[in-house]
Amino acid sequence: MSSKVIMLLGAVLSALLIYLCLTTKKEEIAAALIPAEKKAVETIPQSVASVTPHTLQEKATKVEKDMAAEPPEKPLSDMIAPSFAYISGEKLQVTAIISADDQKNDLFAHLSSYCKSHPCDLQITTEKGRKKAVWEPEVLQILKLFEEAKIPQNSLLINDDKIIIDGVFADKADYDRLSYIEEALRAKGYRIEDRSYLQETIQAPPKAEKEIEQKANETEKKIAEILVGEPITFKIDSTELSAKSKKTLQKIAGMLDKEEGVTIEVAGYTDARGDALYNLRLSQKRAEAVKKFLLSKMKKKKEVIAKGYGATGFITNDPNDRRNRRVEIYLLKRGV
Image (cartoon, rainbow, N blue to C red; front, side, top):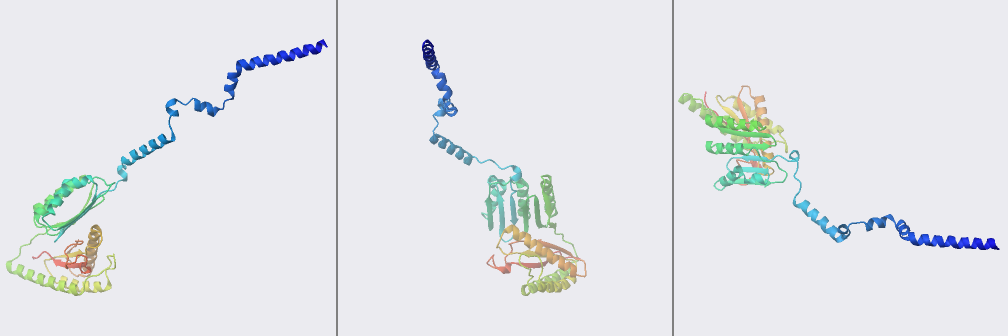
């Protein structure tokens, strides 16, 4: 009986001891049972805890607007070089794709001023991602030289790092000035293709000169009449001569063989449809194709030059008329 009483008292004391321990350590036990996620939330600073989904959206919208307002600039290597085409004639044609900053430079200010008193077709387009036109000062000098020298037909084409210059100079001093300007462009890394030349006058006895000029004029007139009835034609967007045109040119080559003391110019023209730069290149290539054919058929060695004038020198009132696509042949130098 006494042993049972002792066991009962021991159980009561153990229960009392456990109760006292739980009472004194309850805060520590409760803290240990709180999930880790809840602790993290409770330890967030007040400034962060106050951010709501609405304020987060406002901040995201502001960042997007800032990025749109100030787009990152393209690396210079990814930018595109400006393009420029200048073709003079009865009506000056200028086509350019440049940066917005270049539109304010002296070259385009000069062109705008010039076109106020002369017939012009000025098409200047600004485009993002275009490099600066570092050729601008020299090109302005060349255009002013063309104007001062009063060269009736001239052109200047810039595509990437290549510059093509064409014109006929009557004065050697003007021709030399062009060479100096070209050297400045080469120093800037541009490749120059100079198709211009100095038209020299060879003196001859008055009687002989008159006879030669008269004969050359008659031949040029006859060739022009032939080309009106039998125009030189090519395959579409091609420089390949048609079979019919080869026969016509073979006949003309025989006529040119009889001329002495002249330089023959093969001039290519297009209508105004399409891109001005493309038309200029196409007219040049077609003129060169005719030159090559004539040289292959003429028995006597002659000086023949090929010049592409693009969409200039229209022979009809409509610049888009297909008849403006043509090749003409001129006899330039006369003498002995």
